[in-house]
Image (cartoon, rainbow, N blue to C red; front, side):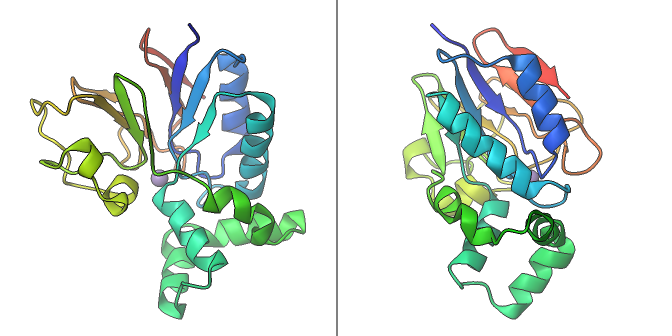
Length: 209
Ligand SMILES: [Mn+2]
């Protein structure tokens, strides 16, 4: 049986992602679930998405979920973002860095339209439920709304709440990976000054770069 890995919010940090992938050394038997937020804040959004697309071509077990930052770019690509939302994305949510990254690459964001529009909001195994932002307290896993799976904050299940599976997510920055009995959060703030984190779930091995 291959390994089962989750990788936290990358936020345009290509070198950290490259180092992490080199440490992990993925093989065709492994499943790697990327938890979303590939873009914004860091300098290399275009290159990060290129690398993810390349990994998906190389390995059969690469899953890329949708984060709230991909929601911003999807809104741009679909023309659903009004002026105020665009300003908020650019100035407060790191979108300026994404625009610059595509500009430097000489590409339009639409070059990755298929990638962005085909990101699922969750993925699961018998034991684990993967999504970007975690699940909303009190709602069964399969009744969760996409908006909560992608952008939930402050409504996490209580530590003793039995969810049926262990939820693995990112989105809310923690200093060190948070490993509870019902959920695991591995967003260690690569978008700011923190490391990028991966966890192998059978062995609970952690890698950081
Ligand atoms: Mn994030």
